[in-house]
Length: 314
Image (tube, rainbow, N blue to C red; front, top):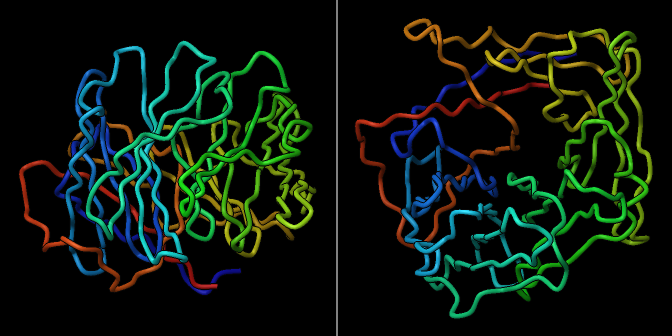
């Protein structure tokens, strides 16, 4: 199925490894950040290929995030203005509440003067890792009491407004584990059905922007892997990517033959056997020489974090 596969391991001398998050990867640029309750978020834009990095200072109101709130940071590219932008969203655990966002422009090298508030309410919680499709960040919510409160939204980078996608309610009205992904530059939602006694199956839905509808693209059935392996992403050919909960063991499932393929070796910290790799999401990444205003060579510090990049040859 694959010509070859290997895992590259980057040492990221930037942020505390226990709280490192990725806000998106666009054109070879990666947004990284970490945030603790009652603290100021640390944000940066990183190009792993050129080893350049830019620290983004947070807006004033981000230093006053209430203790009952949490944040999500998205990263995207607006082709109309040729501008890379960061979206810092603040949400309350006491839902329903509107979303509030600050927008950073890399061209202007500054945050906007005004915050952006959504015209709709957030019910439940927002999955804080956005999915990036053609440079646009998407989010979805979970943990709602009623199916009609499910939504998928995106941030319009040109007009700087939140927008909802239609037709998601009947798709989301399921108890299956859901994962939103970028499938060949289309927004897709994967539903993982993992019953206790029978082989699991995955349904993949694609959003059609022209018809504004979700439709089932394909299904992968009779998946015979341990129930503790969680669906993580899919490749452009439709093959599924799973990972274990604790040690970063990656497995692909062919959507045609149902064949199982191990990617590389199990990643394990032998110097610290009690450590666990927390890997709840993944992003597509393509090397480039792209930079934004103010990027500089990275400086090594005492704090190190690991970023794993899977190189697949089809």
